[in-house]
Image (cartoon, rainbow, N blue to C red):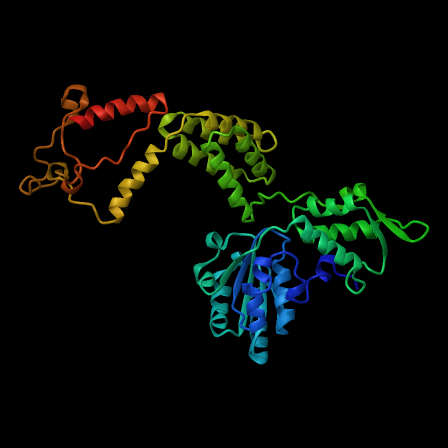
Length: 422
């Protein structure tokens, strides 16, 4: 029988063996308190891949001695969940680690909910997606939500050293000499993904011939050969994705070309053209807006070009657009204006449409006073005539507050100020 991967074998058997995540599993912290009191609640653990979601679930089960089962929301079906539920009925409680919990469909969700309610199944949902974006509220409301932090290099090195020393589960029965630089490369090159680090270490050890004394020597060159490509922190299925996208927009808004290109590069490395495209269009209209109205159409044209080219060539029109948006004058006057108008509407500050603006294209409209007194602007010089358009209770409102950062909006502001003075 083929041996399971090192990362699987080295899963912690108790809370004390978990590396990192001390804000959750450290002495006196929430998960440690749950385990100590044996008062477990269903929870969702989210964060980048390989930082301990499965490890914490395994450690909770090991520390409490409850039955522990692992399923995947995508690949396992309702029948598999029924088996877990049957076991829970017999034993009283089962800890169910449900990977990719954000992909749980309605049928599986509806089946699980009663068992979560009565506590027979303690759900530990694992996901790389932000649960507030991706998980159904029915599940989310029944779970505590805990964000896992990326592991430090020191955390990963601790896990690697334990694996090298452990004779039962790890590589301790082998004679391995590993350079400090190689150990650092395994830790840093994996982007804090301890699973990737452990499996790369195992590959390095098992694929390197020992010397005459039976010692396996691992240096940086071997580590570089065996470590998989560094995980990009903007993985589009991970929560870090939202952080990179946020930094991307804020860098453009702040006119920092170099930072914006850096975050663009990370999103390109993640292959996430849809998010890049959507965000650039939003930026062009939200942050650049009326200060440079041609930025919107040019951004759309660049995106369409990038979509036709694909990567890597698609990076070129995207870079052009990012630089233009960074160095364009900025105006958020349009979004502020519409949000101010909508805020009044949501508060119920609406008022009645003035009678002279109401529809008059039906029989009896005149008798109701509809449309009477309406002044047709095109009949007047410059296509404008003083006339009330807002409801009475809002007639003095001015939602649009022009900014004068760009020539186009400066010209519009001049017209607007002239009109509003009359």
